[in-house]
Image (cartoon, rainbow, N blue to C red; front, side, top):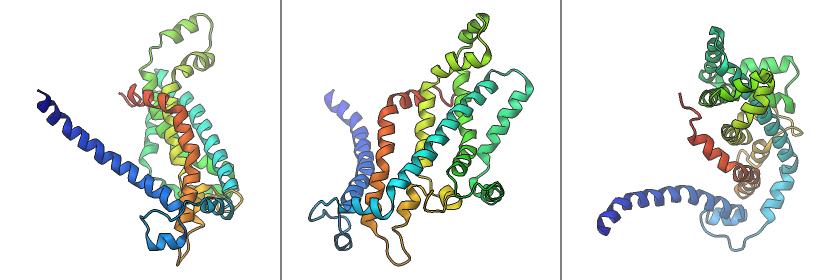
Length: 276
């Protein structure tokens, strides 16, 4: 009996070991290379450093001006997430609870936004931003991220709200609670799981995005973390230890956000967020 159970569980353990190696090995290399000197990296890219030094982190922070880049990334990411949660949840609630034909039409209109690749809209969007003087501004980058991510956020909220019973809202409406107040006090608190999912997924994509800052935020005063780390690359030489050290520093805020929201994130992923 025990032998049969062992053979049944063995493939699962092997799959788990393979997946663990796929995840752990890149993280291990990231940490090891971030402590190496350029000479040690050139001599042995995958070996351990002779001595673990913090010089790369200090040089990366200073030469790439990561302090300013981190603050810019925090402002753009925070403002984008706040706008996505506010407008995405409100729009999805109106569309999910609406019973008229144009509500379905508007919902399909949002879904069409998922079918348009950002690469197709880059040139028209750049012309619009230049016309309204939004190039090289933090709020310009924020608007770009909100425009790109809003359709998917509306989809997530819409499908989640459809799984909620409207009984509490109807009872509140009988007691004199208006639609806006009902949404703010009753519906929105119930959206915590899917809100955590929206926050984490969009934080990762916005924080690590390279294309939007490269196009719309080129000045050193408004550049974000990916562009700051990119400054360590050159035509003939890439400073890989400094790049890896900068990546480690830039990963800390995302890790903290995930640790704070991981329970709600898991609930949002398993509670029918994209259930029809």
